[in-house]
Length: 257
Image (tube, rainbow, N blue to C red; front, side):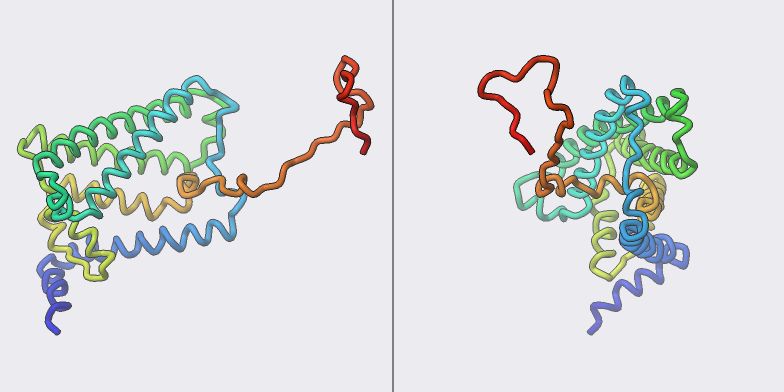
């Protein structure tokens, strides 16, 4: 009977600011993320698109887009693994904390730099190519700013903890348990109050980004063209009696409609 009281005590120790940041804000962001996508799909189904600008310019897009998308994919997988998988699980699998830390830092830094570099190219392209810039909305600009801030804070936290300060910071002792406690419906804000400031700012910027996600072009990341697998073939018929400039070969006569 006393187990559920522990998170409440910790929340009280974290103070009002801690409760607002590490309890209220995550649930608000999660609710807006889920309900926002449902609303967007119901009332703006035809606007659920990236609004591709490849028609206007493709040279920079061919460089920046793969760099950004592959980088952000690795970053997301790394975050999911680090936040969702408990530390005890990796240790039980024979992966020491030192090995995990080195792999996470090296791979995460490379992926973060690639993501930031690709995003920089895409922003440069959007700002310098006239037709692309004309097609850029205020919503797009706010999305790029939010995305850039989140990525920069994540890289800064990693560099500060592992290069400037040295020794690294074991976020799986504080941030990861806090993240899982949100989904357990037993939020523990005291864990986040112990985290370094840069990690806290990174978490806040990520929560705000997820809250804005359903209302931006980022929604396309949650879709896949599965309808193409069951869509019937489109049959094209020509009104001309003869197809092309040459007469059809023997055995290839056109079938009448």
